[in-house]
Image (cartoon, rainbow, N blue to C red; front, side, top):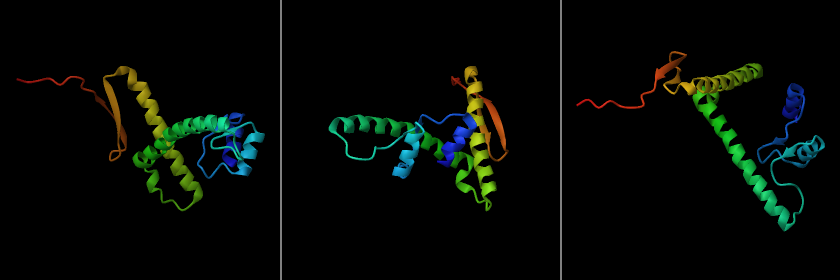
Amino acid sequence: MEAVSEYHRIFGFYPATILADRAYPNRENKLWCTAHGIRLSGPRLGRKSITEKASESKQIYQDGCERVAIEGEFGVVKRRYGLDRIMCRQPDTSMTSIAMGFFAANMERKLRLLFAPLNEWSLDYDFDLGEIILFPVIDEIAVIQ
C-alpha cells in the first residue's frame, strides 16, 4: 500500500493494475485496491462459477506473462549491475545503491535505443574500466583466400 500511495503522490493517479507476488493479494490489500479502483492480479476471493473460473484463469495467465518480463529484468539488474552484492548497512545507503543499479540499467537501455538506428555501432559497458565502449558491428566476415 505504501508503494502504491507513493506512486499516486508522484504521478497524481493510481495504477490501473498491480502485478504482485502471490503473498500480496490478501483480503486487506484486495479491499484497499478495490476501494481505489485498482485491479490486483491473482484469483479473487470466494467461490466462483465455472464461467468465472475460465475467464479468471485467462486473466491470471496474462498477468503472469507480463510479470515474467518484469521479474526477468530484476534478474538482469542483479547479475549485470551488482544488485546481488549490496552489503550496505544503512537503509538509505542500500536504497541509493539499488536506485543507482536501476538507473544504470535504464540509461544503458536508452543508449541502446539511441544508437539502434545506426545499425553499425553497438555499445557495451566495461566494468573494469567503468566506462561505456562503442564498437563497430561487423555484418559480413571477409574471406581471405
